[in-house]
Image 1 (tube, rainbow, N blue to C red):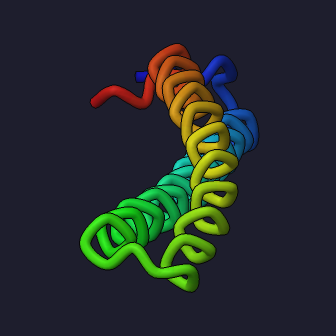
Image 2 (cartoon, rainbow, N blue to C red):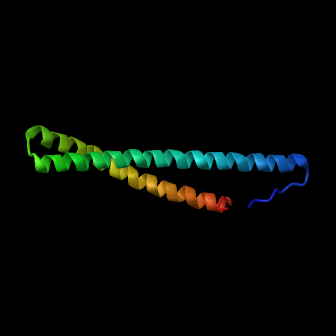
Image 3 (spheres, rainbow, N blue to C red):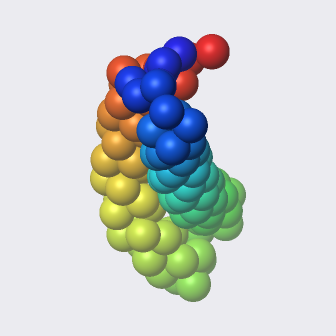
Length: 101
C-alpha cells in the first residue's frame, strides 16, 4: 500500500487523488483489454464453427464462409496475443503501483 508522502491535509488529499486516478486508469485499461479478448474469442469460435460446418457439408457457400472467417480469425488471433501481453503488462504495473491487496 502506498503511503502519502506529505504530512499536510492537502498533500495527503493530493496523494489519494493521484492513487485514485491510477486505479481508475488501470481498471479502464483492464476492462478494454478483456473486451478485446472476448471479441477475439468470438471471431475464433466463428471460424471453428464455419470450419466444422464445411467439413460436415462441403458446399461452395460453406467453403467461402470458412475462408472468410479464417482471415478474420487469423487477425483476431494476432490481436489476442497482443492483448494478452498487454494485460500481463498492466498486471505487472498494477503490482508495482501497489494494487495487489
